[in-house]
Image (cartoon, rainbow, N blue to C red; front, side, top):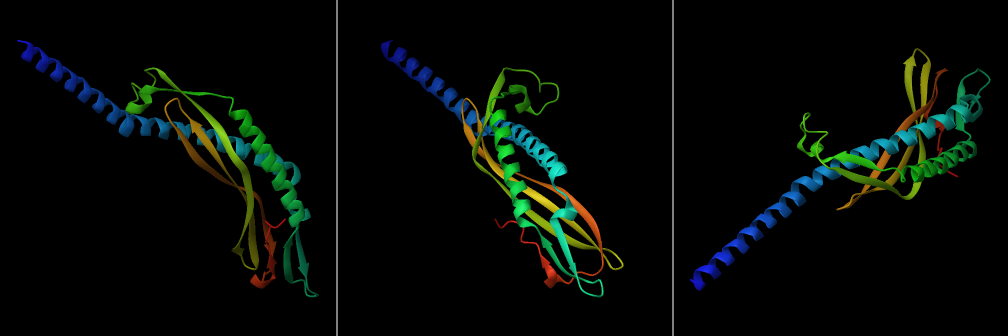
Length: 210
C-alpha cells in the first residue's frame, strides 16, 4: 500500500513537472516572441512618429534650398559646380538630433498597454485578456545624415532631391524581457528642378562632414 502511495506521488510530481515544462516552453517559444514583436512594432511606430515630426518642423522652418545649395555657372550659363553649405546643413542636423533625443526621452515616460488577446491574432479576442505593460528607453545618441539624388526630369532638366536619415536605438522593456530595437526613418526635405545639364564631376554633395 505504501509502495503504491509513493508511486502515485511520484506520478503526480512527474505530471506537474511535465505541465510546467510544457507551459514554460510554450511561453518562451510562442507567447514571449509574439508579445515582443507586438511591442517592438508599437514602440517603433511611436519613435518614428516623433522623429518625423521633429524633422519636418525643423526643416520647414530653417531649410531654404536656394540658401543652402549653390550653383556655379560658366560664361555660357552651363552649370559647372553644385555645392552644399555643409556647415549650415550640419548645424540643422545637430539641432534635429538634440530635439529628437529630448522627445524620445519624454516618450519613455509613457506606458503602452497591450491586451494579451493580441497574441491570438484573432480580431474577436484582440481586446480581451489582462494587459501587458511595455515601456521604451532611448539608447545611445541619435545619428543624422543626408543623402542626395539627381535624376533626369525632362529635356535638359534634372530633378534634385535631398533626404535626411535619422537612426537611433531604443530598448523595449517588458516585465518578463527586454529587447533592443534599431529605428531608422528617411524623410525628403527638399526637391527642385534644375534647368541645364550637370556633369557628374561637378557635384560636391558630401553633406555629412562637420
